[in-house]
Image 1 (cartoon, one colour):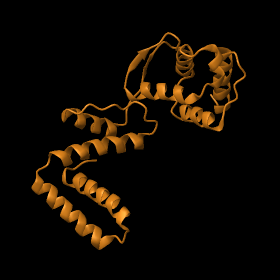
Image 2 (image 1 turned 45 degrees about the vertical axis):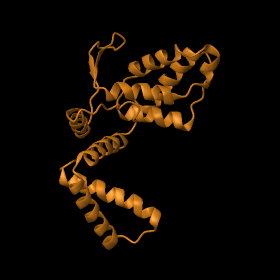
Image 3 (image 1 turned 135 degrees about the vertical axis):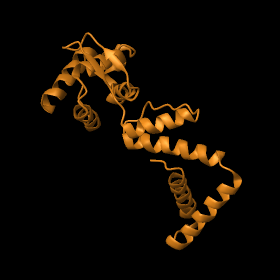
Image 4 (image 1 turned 90 degrees about the horizontal axis):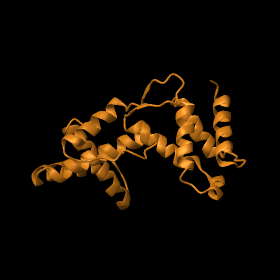
Length: 189
């Protein structure tokens, strides 16, 4: 299916369900394009649109933004679920998977006893950064004071030799260097 057919089908469904002539903004078109690139079936999108619209009063439906629908679809993709849905043409199981690198980070956090909410992240790089920050923060809080001081001294030494920054930039750069040192020491991806 071509992108033009894909977007037209979604637009028709929106008009039928909202009973308004809805014109898609550039942001809405970009959201739909991301769905198309991820090969999300139209039936899944249409069902999600229907579920979201059922919670909105009829008068407010003309102000619908696809951001909410995209969040719902991201929740489905992120939680690695299997859905058997009768609205699918072939009535097959649809699997939504997570990038193996991100799955590894999630498992590491779960092994540490940290619960992680991965819903609402549209981009895998954003999700990966969030998970890495959680792990680094946990490690930083739980290492001994001696180790923390060694890492801090090495980071300050590296900051002085490699960077020429203002005071406000130094604080952020120091955090970045410390995070990289922790990643290197504990073999984080």
